[in-house]
Image (cartoon, rainbow, N blue to C red; front, top):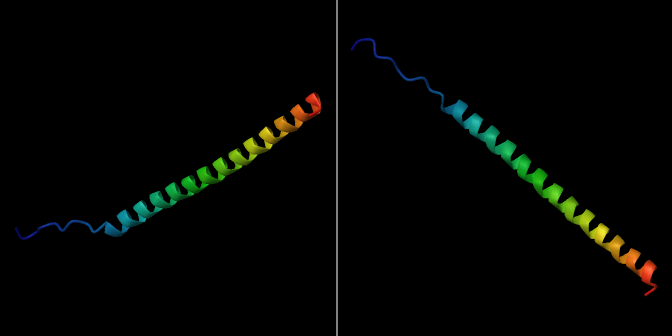
Length: 60
């Protein structure tokens, strides 16, 4: 009973690890939002080109 071991305090490392994981996840979500925004912009441009091609071929 004289030599009781004290648990090591690793709470700061746990917080650092969780904050790093949350930061990486936030960057990933921001990347997904930007990619989907660009995807919808490209889709609108392609649909606009499709309408323009129809007007040239039909003459209306």
